Image (cartoon, rainbow over all chains, first blue to last red; front, side):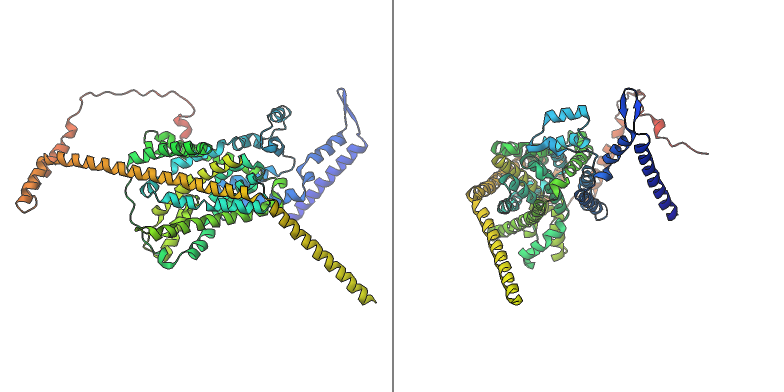
Length: 429
Length: 154
């Protein structure tokens, strides 16, 4: 069977070659209507436009990376809902000759609309170029935030307002990494985009990077989502290192019930307060809280369900593929990517440490002790980080249930990282 | 002689490597010095402080919420207590507790029967208006039942 296939392939190759040669020698020119078209030239032109003829080692490496990411998403289950579209977008954009995405249309950090519209006429504007507009104009991250808001229960945060401080302390990773990125030679706007990886919030990282350093969008998105998937691996050693056995066993009092009125008023007040203090964060916080209000109001159940499911899924597909499309060989295969990967893991680690350390600090003064393990949940990564706190707490004491307590800092982290993004955008944008 | 020249060559190479390395380190340190560190620390300090300040404001907002809500709840509970006092069932229980015991079995049976009869007879109070609402569904491929039926292969 294999021999037959080999024979067929060789036959096809030889036939193709023979046709090409004969076309070049014998039928050099054929007159069709008024123009002279060389069939041999046409054939060679066709051969030259084939992806195989344009493969370079860089594109091959990028294709291999995309396959690794697809493998990680499917086999290892690393954030598959996001990593799979990102990996496939990366795969599509690196197929030579497919012309799915043109980074030149977005050079210099803004959309070249004239080239864009020309591309529609000449057919040189790719599908992913059009889809990428949603990222470039900051639409997808905000739509995703509406969905996240509708899926989030702020009850544990309202019941224990101290959680907000833990969510704030975990943003230490963002700002500490900013210093590291500047020291490694990144420009301030690039450093801000790299630092936001520490927020462990994909849409926020994409939103800020698309505004501050769009050329780094590919590596930053891949780093952010990869590390978010690796939260159960990165966080536990840091949590164990910074806490004692006794601290890990601290049992927290049950959270008080939160009334519906409080849950309805919370998104309205938070939007008003944050937007008045920091207008640059309005688009993220406003969308997050709008989604939450749809859910908590109880009168827009259909809308709430739609933004949680259909809209969220559709936007995730667009966001993932278009972000993956930015990871071209030119953007991805350089020393900067390695630096971003290194800084990303540092940002995550510092954010985790910040939350745990503040919880320990609060315990010095507070009567009601906080289990420091919930501090690590301050790096958004909802609800993965809260689950890590729960599992680490149960390792120390199987009867300790920290999940609901950890959800407070976890959702506070989402608010905190959106605020941090707004601050960086207003200072560096 | 060969040994001397080879040593000389090695020495030359070493000095060149040493010089190049020093130059690289020097370049790196010059790069670090060239960074505007004061701006960097202003961004970091101010940025992180702003995050904390806004979150602290939110903490106060939530605490204010809590106080306002608990005060409102207390008032509601007071109102409930007042309305409960005029409830005949409670007056029975109060009377009984005043006698030093719980509600007697007879009282319980009477209350249960009353509740049973009340809920059992609810369905009798109907509007007596019986209508068949005609629901008209326009045909469309999206709602057509025929598309959802699997053909039966005999």
